[in-house]
Length: 256
Image 1 (tube, rainbow, N blue to C red):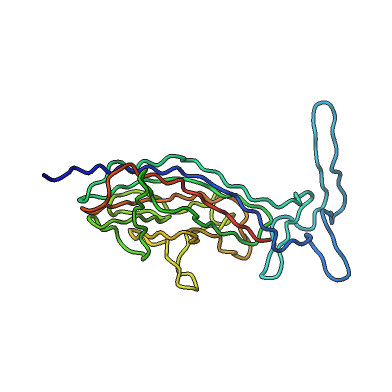
Image 2 (image 1 turned 90 degrees about the vertical axis):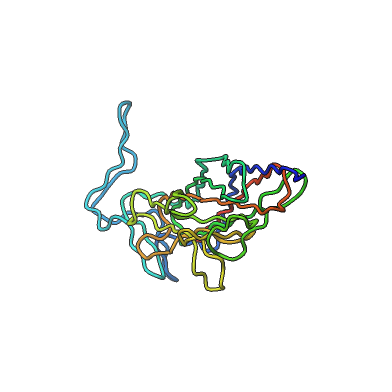
């Protein structure tokens, strides 16, 4: 008599934010001067208020907005915050891939976003082991980027929209648009890393970079990017039964 196997999967999406001040500079500086939170123009006042209003006013500003090159970034205007930051938030915290079968693929999505200010670039790493059962069995991570393969034990992810094995997931979305933020799914790394930006192809490796900013001149990691993680899981006829769980830790590292 063949024993019936029951394989169920659950992912809990977590984040651990890492802020690494690798390079920090004044808004404008050289060997001879340093200008920090200064105003160039005809006049202004940072504190105009009464019991009914509060105003910061400027007159004749000589420059407004972001200006940058490969060597510098400047946020110009009458008043710009001088404190850099990294913000990371998870919208979807529990992902249920359902009860798995050797003839079909379990799928699910988790959503998080990153917002930065006054940074050069950032990248996001996945730090958790693959799905693990209560008995200690580990669902094999998909160490080579490729299509889902029902009947083969594997666990993988990507961060783009897919149509196979189902229509699910989404491409990264820069908020409010691409002129303000430049986040993207990671792929085509210089060291032959696994790709997470190919539709309908999945991979998983502990410590892999899965998303990053592009350090685009004029909008270097400034603003917010919404990311959707697409999860797939397959089992074989010899996969151990049980309930498989993963606490998915994400680490964001930013440079200045």
